[in-house]
Length: 518
Image (cartoon, rainbow, N blue to C red; front, top):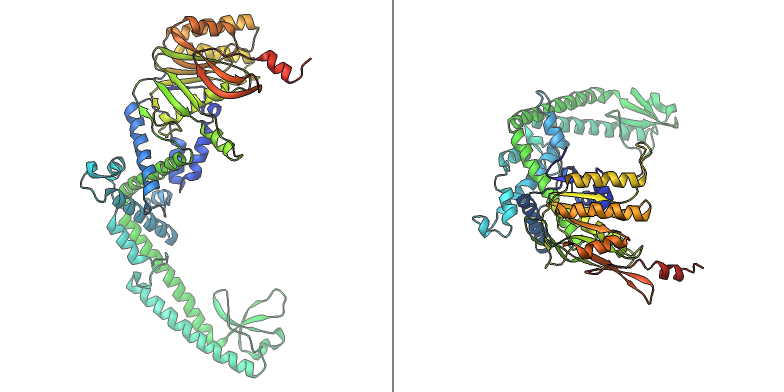
């Protein structure tokens, strides 16, 4: 079934390396909120949508370059917790409440940051981001209520309720009383030689006890609670503090019940606002996503080219970002690409030696155009211009399928058939080693016939080949142009530079002579 916006084949992203771009973006996200947006990122053929996404990233690049105080500390994904407490009787625990408070404060601070110092969008240094933040709710009353429950470190406050305050006072008083009693018993036992001088009270199963040697355990009246792993120490709860320890257990249970009551009451108050809170977390997810795209733009020296709504490529010093990252690790630089496709020069036939950069050139065009229409800035010179394509098709690599009983050449023909059926004047086709994989004379003839059909449909494309007849076709037909990957004849090495206007040579004899073929 044909859709106006079409990407073919299904593993298109893998073929051009966009799956690696997704991975790099996810590494720059602050939370699963942004990572989900990276996974959901899609190619768009709508000019307004692409332009808007690029403007958001451009503004965030400026924030990263010029501002120090953007709030980026607490991007927590509490959506699973919020969904869970929609069920009556469920409640947020202390850690979930702590994450909710900090992330709500982050949302509030981001909105405040973007809305500051401007009465309307025209006055704002970041008008697109400001518009994004304009309708976002920030829930000051919820934050205030959480602050009444939690300390700055995320623990339930003593004064979260009058009952909790009473319980904790009694707990403290009872524990102090037990501690005094134990210290008195311990001093007496130490003076009588029942326990060592350096022994102190310890906790076992939540009860304060005294460590005693097994042979002397009958010297202290009480309950033996535990024994050390070596068997050289037993832990005795003196009879005088048993009742007080029991009271502590009771108070701890009362404390837990009161905390649950407080958290449940807050969750009941929160429940009606959950849909609005979730919308605010979608904003936080979007900010995380835009921030990751901006960080990648800075890493890859990317920018927004002049954008038009029709298919168009006029790129200066275009760079494959993944190749750039890989070569930079070895202290090397990418040779930039200059390429132009427009109405009278729609299909570029690239020829030249093997390992001369033809496939890299093709992948660079596919990756950068796809990145751009996914809302990512691209590594080009600022003078570059870019357009919007309705669909992109690629045929590259060995597609031999044992399961479908397809040879490599058959799979290429299948791709050609689908491209011819669906491509139009809004399409970009990318074909590597056009017509290869079969007897050259027949393969070249079929490739020329397919190329003629592409040209008749006024589609755009980048095609690599070694076939002379395709180079002649480009010379003789309007809309198709030759391009050559340059090669240094004297040094016998590829220059990885594209020159449009003339066909390239495969330098097959020269390369054979260089490697010493007899």
